[in-house]
View 1: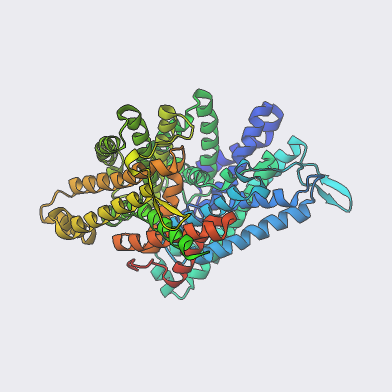
View 2: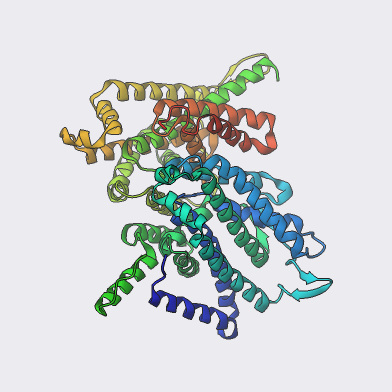
Length: 327
Length: 288
């Protein structure tokens, strides 16, 4: 997976832009960009499944929302919780859920996998939706952001918007780098082999079930991390966060950005969050526009933004006489 | 639980199972024959209920309202297939999921624009509003029996249509080997449009006939869609027989779940699914 040079330049410029943004942007847009970055992490985690392992999960929001709910549960109403407690609880809880759901799901493939992941996500949705102790369909507030302290002295104050912005930005970059390392490791080679041809990969002697399950757990846990950030950022978790509309939205981010590229889904997340905000400004019936947009992308832009960029950059390098870039 | 209550619950479960079967059989047929995963199927169920609610307001007669709604739904199903679904036959499931997800967003929003966000009700017609006495103090509503009977008739009709008619023969052949059917000179694209339209109408019909007992509200399609997916997965994707067995299992699991575990009723449904999938990952009647 080689990132074409023009894309690399663009990504670095984008990163630079994000770094200086809090100094120049209005507070409304700073909030919006934080949301974009959180969904960027969420979308990358789904790309690990769809774009690299070949598992089309339609219940990925379950892990996102579950982590948020776990954060809400461990945060007392009287004061903040330490991140050293909250984060491990959220991530371990989500990893465990991903283990159980994955154990059932990854033995199937294709349309079965889509339907089963969806069904499990809906099971969690109804669990939280019907559970009045956790706020039912209204959701539950997270009154305090977690504290990050060592030996009583605060390292980072997440209540400060500046600090939290950079916390999210570093999380985004770290997630991207971690996934890149994972994908270039032998493990990454195997899961990509599974996507290309599972039978052949199995014939090579790899226990594909285990590889798929581990990929599912990693993706779920990373989605959970994004959900943790969303809980800290928004201060509220509702069943809608793990419903299938959310799963569809994040799947849309992956496709719009271009699956199997990691950076593409991040671009997709930025675009979708922006569009959501823009459509909501235009009309209260913005879902009509969103539906039309989703259909248009499926019909006219199946390889997403990244596909477009790869085409353009290979055209450019061919025009210069250089070797064309490969995906 | 005494024996009468138990029987009432069984009848409720079977009646819900029949409704699920109407929705799930369309879903499974559309997948089995056309290879399309259609998320908008639940939206058709909702549309059926709203059409009846709207036309009942005009005609003041449930049966007339259902009749007109059926024709409208056949046309809508055909149109949706031509305008959107027909572009998806060669595409990956991923894109089918997304496009039909986009369709849901549009249909749900149109519903809100046309009919608002309140809960609406459609009255049970007078001739079916009675109740059958079971014991001295327990009765069973006639309309629920009526739903079961009608659904049974439709299930039998489908069995005949698929097993005994020329169209059914083409449908079965199309499911088995699409290319071969095309080579034999059958207009497959028209066949697909008909199957899709019939499937959509079946789902809508379930919504129409359930409207007087379930009330008509936004999002009613989303819920039935998910449960129908569970039914289809349990029965084996593409199998109508599987959809029937799955629908009955889920109808009963849901009904008894509500009685025995009222706080976590929907968990019973998914637990049933999990157990069956451990045993047979491809569903009861699915091909591996």
